[in-house]
Image (cartoon, rainbow, N blue to C red):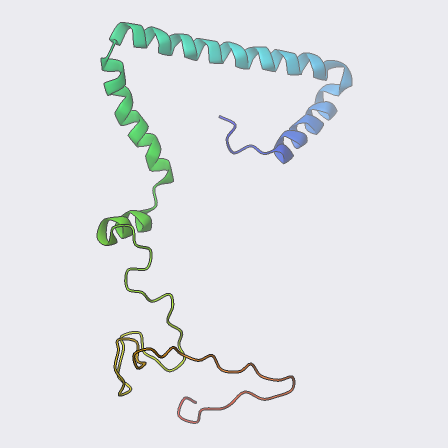
Length: 143
């Protein structure tokens, strides 16, 4: 019930209650609220236990689909499709290690061997960072 309520919200409610009820009636209101919440929890627990006693083992069979429905709250379609299609591999095509420094993701169109555009045993070299005040190189074909 209070899963998404943080300490900040509780503090705001206490301060608002202090202003609305005043310091004289706030402790009484807090104890009444605590007693009411405890009663509701006791009623819910009693009803659950009574249902469990009356239904017996069928109660667990009824409860399983309800637990599955609760799991749908955290449903992420992208994660489910990835797990189903690629057996949980987050990077099935191996594209995370490839940079855009002259190689093509589909591989090998610049006259080299290998699927990533580099000869076997070679790795892409990182360009040197620009020095302060240095202008970046311009590629006239790209502009």
